Amino acid sequence: MAGSTFGTIFKITTWGESHGKALGVVIDGCPAGLSLCEDDIQIYLNRRKPGQSSITTPRKEADSVEILSGVFEGKTTGTPISLLVRNTSQKSSDYSEIASYYRPGHADYTFDAKYGFRDYRGGGRSSGRETIGRVAAGAIAAKILKEMGITVMAYTHSIGPISADLSNFDKDAIFTTATCMPDRLADAKATAYLQECMQQKDSSGGIVECMVQGLPAGIGEPVFDKLDANLSKAVMSIGAVKAVEIGDGVLVSSAKGSENNDAFVADNQSVSKKTNHSGGVLGGISDGADLILRAHFKPTPSIFSKQETVNKSGENIEVEIKGRHDPIIVPRAVVVVESMTALTILDACMLNMSTRIDYLKNFYHK
Image (cartoon, rainbow, N blue to C red; front, side):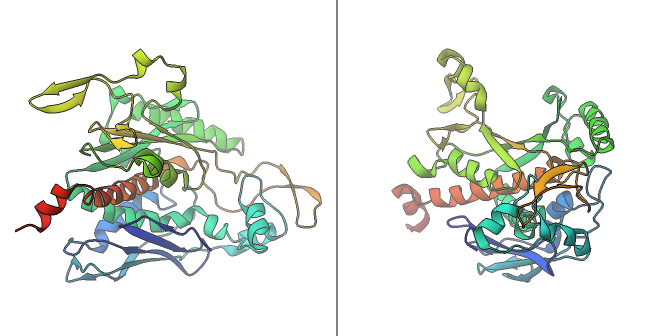
């Protein structure tokens, strides 16, 4: 299978299936000398693991990470880092029935069309558990960025028709509410809405917003490797993401130039902007303002209502999907968006070190 590797200098390859023995990631390009232990990574994995609230799948997994290589005496060695998370709560029998048909909204049909064979136990590589490797690697990328003065923070912007009021932004609520919303009032409304969806045997979509602060101007490559283009690819590669916006996003199509342009201002030889409609990116290169990104997630396709589909014999049938499923993908995907953003930003920063002669001279000239 091609397509499991991401990045240019800070490069990751994820592996494993939802109901296999384990999942994990191999990270190449991590600098030597970074303090790193399992706890640094586990904090991130705990944010995406299942079974933590009434609005997540009841599947219970510890998602405990093991560092297999690349770290010695608490420091990275500069060699590939291999991370492993074992599956401990598989119920493959829940999925034996779907081997004969294609679930609506899932990749069952497309996997069969591509490979002529698929792992029907929870979707195999198309399962949300594939994101374990992304999050484990993202935790390391975020740790490196933090040492560079760059922070990446994602949160739930909306669930169904309920949106967080960012004027009431509460960072602690992101980590303590079931919805990961930074607005406790919106969290209560969204939770009630999701309970209604569950009673109706249905699910909901939503939006994750991610903010990068401390990113200097000048990061990103023009033309094909624009920063926003690479971020869009990174986030769109997350299962269930159907749209990505940077800054004002789709609103720019109905705006006037006088409304959309951000005025530049000079202050003590530094350049900043009065507004941030661009979302921190101009011409594919960071402009020094906060980078703002939004990912739109579709509703969980595994719902318990009757649905129409076809079986592998080409017959039209009705199905009622069984198993353990989230009524919404968004809260557990918050840290996945954060991780893919961190991976993309770090890789772009590393690439940027070779774009100017003075950067090379400052590093190598003694």
